[in-house]
View 1 (spheres, rainbow, N blue to C red):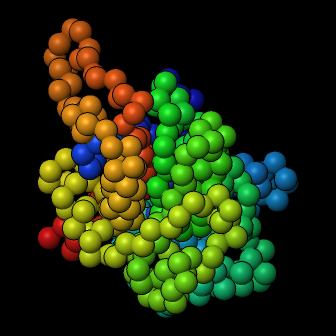
View 2: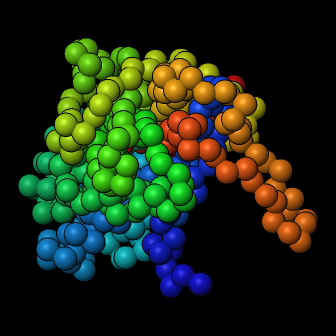
Length: 329
Ligand SMILES: Cc1ncc(COP(=O)(O)O)c(C=O)c1O
């Protein structure tokens, strides 16, 4: 038994279909209590502010967010008894607004991108004395992923080496914290970032429309440790959404745009690593859903041989958060 909902932060690592001769697994972050990877930094940033004495009972939190951090913070604020105002670009999905509303948060919608939302949150902090946790700069954001996401993956892969982490970049917290932790354990591994084609600032592109929910803020986020990145892959929104439809229909995994995009990039990396190793594809087992829920003995799974490249990616949130976008129609 957990003594409170915030004790349930964490997620399973699940194998998905991958190019022949490779294995891809994904952290299913929708399993966190607020339904996304952002529950981890939300909790860590609030705890850090409490520790520093910046956040005290009766205070109101304010944060600019494209949605999931707002949901995570709204959940943490509700569980710990704080008030919260979330500032969000009006373009983000209505499901996100409804969920924050359900947690009792106040919402302020701004026209424009996350940059306009940041300006408005700064105003509210200065004028109304609200406490802003600043996910783009707060070191507790990557630290949360170092201590939880990264540590969980190391435990979940058991005796296996991780060969690559491939993950989208919003604030950079996930890839920085998780990448640091994994590289300590597996120094030879690659860390590969993913950014949207319409906002590919890390690969020399222009700032564009902020149409990828959660990924590609249009600037290089301070919380991103660029030194950690071995490479950056670029994905387009249409292909990412098509991959989400395929994942739902063919693998029974319902996720949002940035997860589809991260998986497309993970497949490119896995294919390259498989080619470099040139092993017999038959050696690398695919996903196994023969669970045997009614059997007394748990089902046996094949070990993943060390020679099969193992690529870890992140499925940030559930596709249920994107129904109104029409991407599953
Ligand atoms: C749906 C989604 N995908 C990806 C990300 C990127 O995560 P990070 O901010 O840790 O880089 C986020 C972050 O908000 C997100 O909400």
